[in-house]
Image (tube, rainbow, N blue to C red; front, top):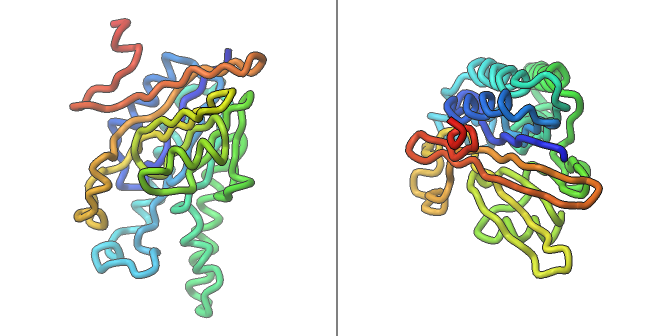
Length: 246
């Protein structure tokens, strides 16, 4: 039986440190075979096309420092685990856009950011996957992990249709969809480890369902059996077996 922990969407210096620390402490107790970072450990909101004045005032250096510290906390939580990072849409996509800028100064700075991000990923993990709907899949015994490639209320169902049994982040919310097929394909969306209320979503009522937390579970590759759990943060407490064993 293989054990894993899936932490996603920490978003640089917008991170929720309590969720990251809970995942770190739980990893030390669970001793997982896999530590999987689900992407968007950086935010780079100031590089977003059409970024507001407030977003443009955020420091990229603060974003870089926070992301590296998150990598250290999470992937350093259990050294024997196999460590995997799935790039998200915030990590490099905005940087890559600037690599094609007609301004040399912007291209040079974007290249420095690209190098920094890839260096951190390579230093703390054993392997990674790009932000790509086909190539961005990490699979353990028939269960897939992706960053996430769909939004909205039907996102969990769409991932079940597209990837079969899987887990993803991206939408910052917990959810489960079980397909009516012979293998009962299950898709699990996982909550985030970043601030829930931000300036860009102040009027988006769809984000009210967003929650803090992470995913974990057990996979039997030989029998194709998956036991999936959602570690939700509710009123500052996480629903974890460590609480039951105290």
